[in-house]
Image (tube, rainbow, N blue to C red):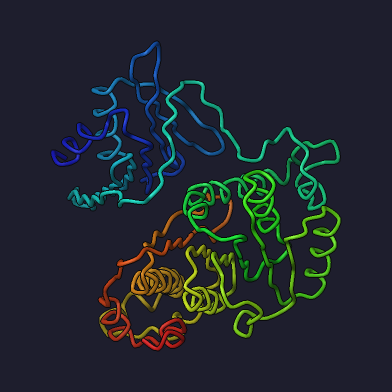
Length: 383
């Protein structure tokens, strides 16, 4: 544990954004733990939030106490720690034999981090004010007519705001694009909670000149969303019935969003985005079945015989390959938790930001070969 102790000594300061501890030995004792710096009477402490069932328990520690408490947790209770500071991200894994593995990654230039709020009684600041009426939230059933968040829709409200936090991160990149009007495509928009939220945030709140197009295969959904956009006088928000693979109504796109597009539809959306040289790509994949059907390896047969394990490995491999291909095409790519897995298992966000003179490598092609894979995105990009 000496390596972990040295790491904690280095990162437990005001530069720390958050530590997340998970992979509990007993989820009835603890599900996860979050730690953040706080100021109490101008003195630095660290607040531990321990999640047990539906309850959260808070405790404040000084640095030396926090260091010892984390070491105890990692020895007795949990096996994984993720830390984010303003300078780097770290992952700590503890094996069954208590071997400590630490991976550290410096924050690259150009990445935007959240400001670190150290007040003790910090309340969650949503981008959309939960006390303010928003027409599309009312019509979509998230708010009541009085403007209160419907209890059964609070997870959806948090999801919308979480999404807008990711958009807020890349707002400076959008503002850098010198165009009269930006074009954003939302492939597989569905009921369009997030499409309306994106337009409201960029056009109404940030006064950014944008045209947003939502595309979906369901005609009734598109018709309903079009009527709502007309009702709110969102003149630059349009909904079109159509398929991702055949969509060719625009030639130049600045940002492509694909949220929960099923299976290979995500690949078509990413391929379209890269063919347009889009500056930003947001993708939350869904239902990755393709590679699950293809994966074969004598070395992995003892693992792949368990269907659930193979399914999950296939989903992660699918998204890992997608992220690598985006890097190869010049996108600084991050794979992040979109929203807490307790709310939805579809919780991985692949975010790519185009950057000149940046190119990934082709190491992933060896993995594809070893597992006998033919991913759709590889075929589409002719790699």
